[in-house]
Amino acid sequence: MVAMVVVVAAGVGGAGAAGRRAVLAAAGGWSALGVRRGRHAFAWGANDGAAIGTGVSSAFTDRPQPMLQQGPTQQREGILLRPASLAAGVSHTLFVPKENPHEVWGLGLNTSGQLGTSLKKVLAAPTRLLTCDAPIKALAAGHEHSMVLTEDNEIWGAGLSSQQQLGVVQSEPYDWTTLSDVFAASLDTPIAHWSSLACGASHSVLLGQDQNQRAVVVTSGCNADGQAGPRPTLGDSDVLAPPGLLFGTAHASDTLSIAAGTDHTIIVERTLEGTRLWGTGNNEYGQLAQDPEAQDRLMELGLLMTLSPEETVQQVACSGSCTYVLIDGQVRRSGLDVQGPHVGFVPLQLPETDLRFRFIAANSMAFAAVDMQGQLWTMGAGHLAAHGHSTGPVDALTCLLNQEACQVFEGAKQVQDVVLGHDFGFAILDSQ
Image (cartoon, rainbow, N blue to C red):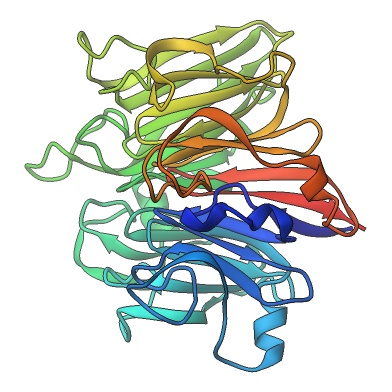
């Protein structure tokens, strides 16, 4: 089987994208990128900083344009066609090519060194950024920082760390630097191995296991809204959090997963007794299921929701103002989005009552979901939103890619996954 990716979030030029075969797509800020099998990569939306790779910075395109116009044909058609993983920040994109899982490539805005090189402020074409000894396990991109996790337990970071999002306070941006010792030195509990990463705007969340095989969550970075959780602060600042333990399971059999919004953090704890959803950080819009009039932020972890052992949390998606939880195919939301404000997790309003979903994604402008038939549904705000409609806000979940359009995906069988961050998301399809 070959991993393919279909558009989860499109830019303004989303109209017409349904008739094209998208192999990979990711949305960051106001832009989205797609890769067509056997063809060139296509991009659409705002291109401030060249994050969509059309080769022209500070441009906007309202229809798909070829990516990678520079370089040899092999580079244009080989590097991006089968990415092993990809992450998109506001204006920069990272990916690992399937052809070489030891490498990290990227393009886009680099004004804060988020692409790990001090040589250029903009990389308009995909550029090899980092080569690691071991294969890449995970990527994550914040607003102005990037993180990479390898199979041999090395943590790498690049970009801005003025708010300690890369573990230490530094005024100058980082080129690619190993951070494993930085995180290890700050933790009282040794970490046996790391398993995943998530980045908020200016904070980072890492999931690992300690030497007793218990799952642990470690955070670092801006803590102005409590998104990193309580701990002694660095110097006289009360908004910076050095790497520290936010949460740990009581038993080795318990499992955790993580998600990061712009300024809030979500942890899903699964135990034999059921599932608990925990959160900390900004609650200005009720994204942490608390009344914002009473608590506009949670400075320590609060219990947001409890589920029975029969209920399964499949995924959590965070935007800056809303948290979405996928539970047994149904989406619940708390916070503010185009369907209005609501405090406490309520069902997403659906155009069809029997709709059930496999995967969800959210970013600062939009929400997307893939249903059980492999169709793509989106909604969002703003004329440049990543919901794929160019005519302004879409406050009802709308089918952007239906089954008829999916038939042009030769060999595509089903959606495999949706990967999301605070302002990006993409879905992977299986093909023959």
